[in-house]
Length: 179
Image (cartoon, rainbow, N blue to C red):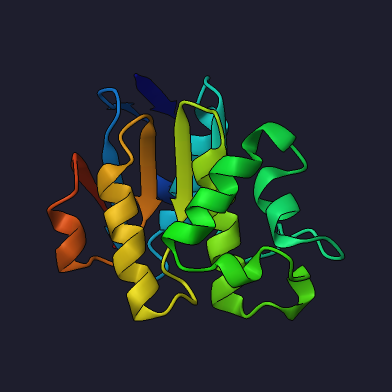
């Protein structure tokens, strides 16, 4: 699979030159770099430029649907995905969330709901911006295990670099600011 990226500029500042990324099927790819180097911009651009079905999980929890339950947020009201959503909640030991309203969840719990929704998406690509934001250490370990086992699609992550993650990677891309 190829993703062609055009020049990315903001206020005449070049963040990324035109390039074509080659992504073999079913891998885990990480974009990392310094703050302000354009990692999120690059990830969003890759999502937009992808000519395939894809899901984007942003680094915030703004895509939470308030006034609904956790299962509905994960499945987006698709009854066929309900069993998989319950299985994923059990994997993270979050069964207690099944019947809770979203506005009562912590930031980390909301983050996990957004991530689980992404894992249940059916696209070829899953783009995740800073997946560990707001998540406690035990669930970060479970998330890394899930990423290790999740091989059915290409997953592109924007991550601060973590040693545990290095063992899982298919490829790593580093963003740095141009001087």
